[in-house]
Amino acid sequence: MSPVLDRTAQTDVPILDVLAERWSTRVFDAETPIDEEALRAALEAARWSPSANNSQPWRFLLARRGTDAHARIVDSLVGFNQGWAPAAGALLVVLAENTDAEGNPRPWATYDAGQAAAFFTIEAHARRLATHTMGGFSADALRTAFELDARLAPVTVIAVGAFGDPDAADAAVRAREAAPRKRRPLDETLLLDA
Image 1: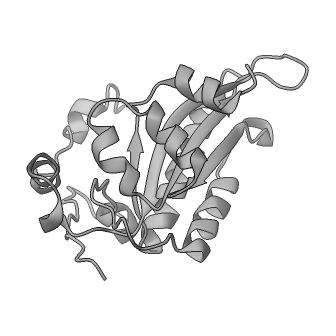
Image 2: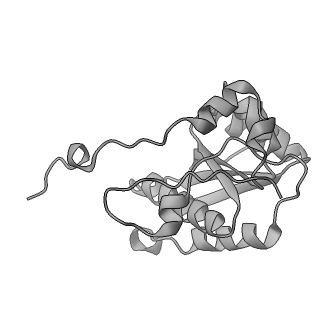
């Protein structure tokens, strides 16, 4: 098993361990197959995330390493992401269904799809899968590569798989993995606390 860095957040207030311990790695084990049971559980957690009017306006494209679909998702990634993400055991594209079947807008769909992505990453982490959610991708490339319906908007791509050995990563990735975890102070985030 690859070594897993302890990247537990130093929170100002105690939170659930699974939340404090979850972090986004860029180092995946390129040889270990995805743990299918853990992957299925993470997808099930996403399925049970909350949504407005129980509309469940999320859809997923799931592609395992070594498949043509995985390669097409990798091709949609931009910049630095193309260097490390191919090693992930699977790539999950989270899509928001921005209109319903009758064409009525769903202004909350992107938010709800984001909640599904969050539930996925938390359950995956609880089951010892590594994840990294990415914004660095071309939505147009994904639309073209998978002939997506116009109602579906790519929201994020999530790399998921076994943790890799950070010492085996290239220098740029190692530097990012070792960088301190930081968050803006809560007082700066709360615009109102009445």
